[in-house]
Image (cartoon, rainbow, N blue to C red):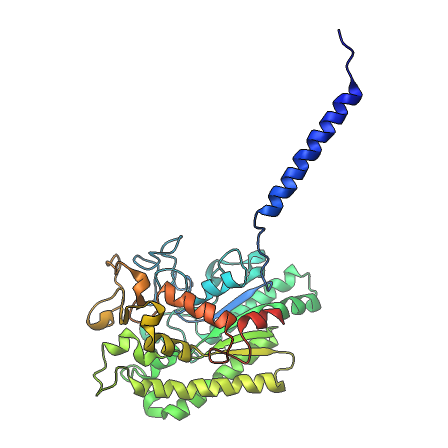
Length: 376
């Protein structure tokens, strides 16, 4: 029998272990590492353009938790009002979040730390906006829901207000409101008195006064990096085109000009907030009117073949009634600017997100882009 050489055994074992360790390190370095989000949290206020399921469990016609909605989304029909990702889904990915920001309706506890989506289809700045469609969370209610989140977070931070405020100051907040205050309020005189009570100019002023108060409340609760979106060119959506019989004009310019009054006032409000009215805050004005206008006017150069009809819907321009349950949608969604009577397709949402995230001009984001906002 040969004597066992302990020294030789350990030398071989150590050399094999070293090679194995080196191979593992090399393998780890060659593989892409999980991306760290550029901001700790992303909080979202808005309407059906960014709702991701908050309306699923309430009594309303403004719901999208049925096919063909979500036909191109991995989790299917979640309550998103499009075929795939919304604008904020695509933006969350650009900001480096590994998961989509969850809806407030089913998010509590530690899960809230990476952000919450409070958006609700049919909601607006005014509390009564969207009541014609049923229940929803108005902007006032969404701000109250955020206040509830901050209260829960205070417990997670063990009452350390400074640590909580420091965390919230690094997060990004998005607010996109106003579309329904026109679509499902001002331009619906059978249901609402606002068009007889206010001129378009006076109505924009009243909306901005209320909205300014709500955005200030979000600031008071801890928000410091805030994106506020203009109202898009809704005089050109299939819903309006189905109802409009204009003389020579393709879109309903009466609605577009009323919206422009609100948008120009909102940009001035951003200047006011950034000018010292809300100390330490940085607001970014997202010009959704300009970006939707560019896509509408130059759709073909972005690969869109159909810019005036919904991919799914009923009636003229597929815009008289929105997508019905289990209705067959168009085959190639990539060719359509609009998914239904009101909402863009996933491809359009991704374009809006990319252009606002890294825009090199002030035509889409003002005074800086979203990537720069995240870095502050």
